[in-house]
Image (cartoon, rainbow, N blue to C red; front, top):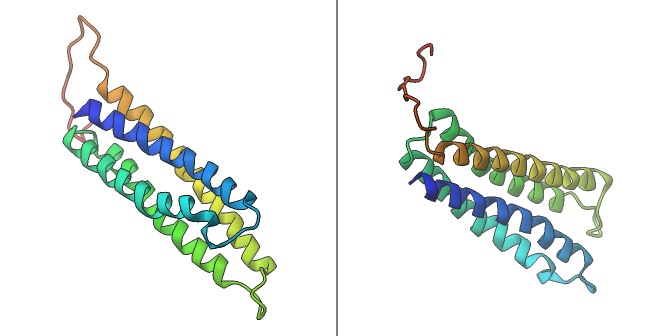
Amino acid sequence: MRKAFVIVSALLLVSFALQFVFAAVGAFTKPAGDGAYALHSVTGMAVIPVLTLLTILFAALAKAPGRLVGLATLPLGLVVVQALIAGLANGSTDAAGASTPFGLTIAGLHAVNGIIAVHVVVNVLRAARQLARPAPAGTTQVAVREGEPA
C-alpha cells in the first residue's frame, strides 16, 4: 500500500502541474470561447478530487501517521476553496459583464491557492516516499503511538 500511496501522490502532483498548463491554454486560446478552460475545469473539478480521495485512502491503508493523512486531506479542502474563489471572481462583474478590479483581485487568489495546493502535494509526496523507504539494515524500528513522547 505504501508504494500505491507514493504512486497516487505523484499522479496528484502531475495533475496539479497540468492544471497550470491547462489554465495557460485557456488564457491564450484565441478567440476565447466557453470551451477555452474545459481541460482546466475537468481536471480541477473531477480528476484532482478523485486523485485526492485516492491519496487519502492509500495514506490510511499504508498506516501513515495521522498528520500525514491530514496533510493528504488538505488538497481536497483547497479544491473546494478554488471553486468558491472562481465562482466569486466570475460573479464579480459589472452590469455589462466585464471584469471588475475586485473580481480580478479575487481571481488572483485562485492562482495563489493553486500554488499552495501544489506545495502541500509536494510535501505529501515527499512524506509518502519517506514512508515507503525500507528501514536501513541493522536498525531496530520502535513503534511510537501518536501523542506519546519519543
